Image (cartoon, rainbow, N blue to C red; front, side):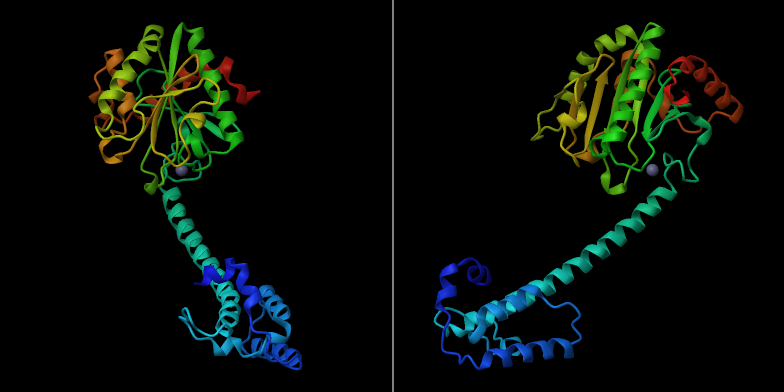
Amino acid sequence: MCEDLRSNPRKKGKVKESRESAREGEGLEEFLRRERAQGERNMDEDFVNNVLRLGARYKGTELGGKKRGGGAGEDEEEDVDMKMFQSRDDRLTDVAAAERAQQAAITQHKAQTAALSQCKLCPGSKAFASRLMVANGQHVYLQLVVGSGLSQQHCLIVPMKHTQAATTCEEDVWAEIDTFKAAMRAMAKARGNGILFMETALGFSKRPHASIDAVPVPLEVEQDAPLYFKQALLEAADEWATHKKVITVPASGGIRRAVPRNFAYFAVEWGGGGGYAHVIEQEDRFPADFGRGVVAGMMGVDPPRFNRKGQGASAAEEQKLVDAFQKHWAPYDWTSA
Ligand SMILES: [Zn+2]
């Protein structure tokens, strides 16, 4: 009914014209007084406009005289009252909605702060392994994967800001991810290797920190990757999946052109650009290390090698690996310029 009143212009003309004009000033004054008495600080412009619009028809008692639930056959005066209340209700609804939004923002901020304080990929977090950061851009950094790496130069390309997926990061972050990819690609190419980029973006309710695996691989592994990944994705995909199991990712625009924001997905990209993506519908059934598993299979590396617990390298070993990486990376390190 409320919507009907608001949207039906015919009703406007049906309001009774029987009020005496002498009541106009009185009504408005009474309304203003009531508003002040109730401690209302912000006058509702719509409401005032309604009062002015109604003019002689406004009797000043609409605020207190409202009867809810008026139905068909009721006096048309009820329509006027309803309209007056509609404006006020709208305002109260706005205030309530604003409070709810603020509360939600606070809750989200708290959850975000808690997630960040334990985040292994947030540079400000205590859990962050700064010793493994091998390049530091403006928005994105490069972290060497030690212990569970598929090859010696296996890195993570990571947005500095806690972001859940490449599809949701900002433009300048995305551009810098591309710059890192290009540099990693050039480094791999110079060594006669190919490279694969993979991202598994899921479990958004747990507020993950997005990262992209950059895995230098033998050239033939990169060449075979489309075939292997297509097969693996078809097999891994949910039987009742509503999305296409294998989405082609364009070389230009990448994953952001292929998968809508806030969808969980797995994406793999080949060195030359372009790749495949898969929208993950049943997150609990999609292995978080799916991509690494496929690459391990292609490289003939035993997957448990990177799943095994207690494989932590010593600080000295880590430093050695970092130094080795830096030697290869130095000519391509655009961040040190
Ligand atoms: Zn983080």
